[in-house]
Length: 150
Image (cartoon, rainbow, N blue to C red; front, side, top):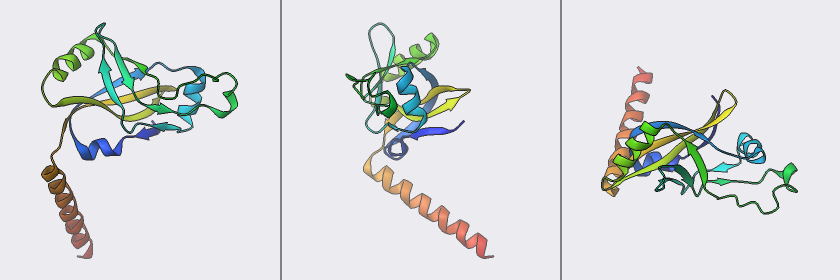
């Protein structure tokens, strides 16, 4: 399960409450470009429309260089459809109506030749939460170093 892209900033800026796995509808050149790691998840999010379809918004997949002739009018940040079960979409819709919750893509990876997206239901962290997170990480690092010394 090689990871193609990871949204590291989401783990820092948001507290992840739940995780979902979703398939992704892509064209052939998009799949080849994604498998070469030409993906950027920064600033992207999950949107669910009135027809209860999930969409990956603002995810940048660069055009595949050998297929530049086919992708003349290609928009790298167009909305990409996510494949989720009805129960998962219903759960997401119910959760997203709560104040302060949002759905973000955390990772994009391959699984059995298919491209999957890990979606995280998340709540934004405050500035003091982020500082506390860094402080805890640093103390754990120091403890591990001291344990190695003995």
